[in-house]
Image 1 (tube, rainbow, N blue to C red):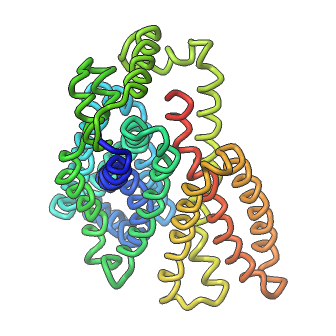
Image 2: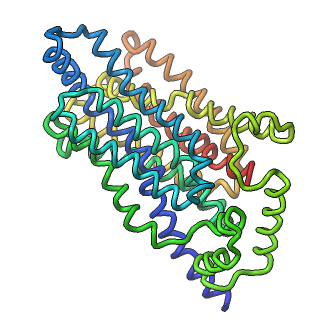
Length: 404
């Protein structure tokens, strides 16, 4: 088959595969981060009402805030559990099947959210957010693995950062669905939290039609024929000898390292040959989570209010923060091959540090110096742009690049 046929078949199949995997994967992660902000007051009110019905005691503001903090933290706790089980799931089920099985956690959370009122239990909301976190933890680790192993080398630089793009897209969609004109009202907030089932259903219907990871089929399952068929479906032509040789070399490396079994955390850290790679991943991933980007999102409404934006319009302007991250993530995916991961990652953090300092100064002077509220508002958008251009787009692909 000609190279022209390969060039035409590959992008079309690849785009559909990426969309099918990501809509129930990292898009869910961004979506579930965004939708929890709108119903904060409604959930806190429900917590207080439930305790009053059970024990006849109204909770103090501190107690309600503490329980709400536990509800929000359940997402991160679930993410930790999901990250820990992602590796074994990817090996046992396969990359594609792991993404499909992962939908079980999200569907279970949807049922909990939709039935909480019948049993009057705020604990069910806590459990639902925990299960959503597990879903996100699995998808954030398995999806980049699936993309890398199913994509030709020459296209990996474009496909790999798409995980960050879909995360940002999920944030924007969550902000839109959370508008008071859509589902961001008190009667509808349970449906807002349950709306994450829609992308998951789309994935369950579409993703089964696409290929399994060729490397999983060959290395983990030893099925060379199925591997060749998967590559042929992806490429639109027969598998080349160079690709087969590359997979064989990877199989030999896996065999030397102890087989296809997912290695446990202590086994990885005890391997001197992997210690620096692991340290690099831990540092960069921790930096992305601790850089305060989510806190900037939370501060956005306050800063916009101080800048004179009408209360009814703030929710629409806030969508611009998610749009900034989406646009910058798209830009990062286009520039990463030309500028390199190191420059984008370090440059992003340098700009974020600069804007954070200016933001801190502007907030401190907001009541004393005119115009500081507008500078604070500008810092929010530039900080998020810097995050999307570097840390968000680069960090998510580092594990598959370092250990791929």
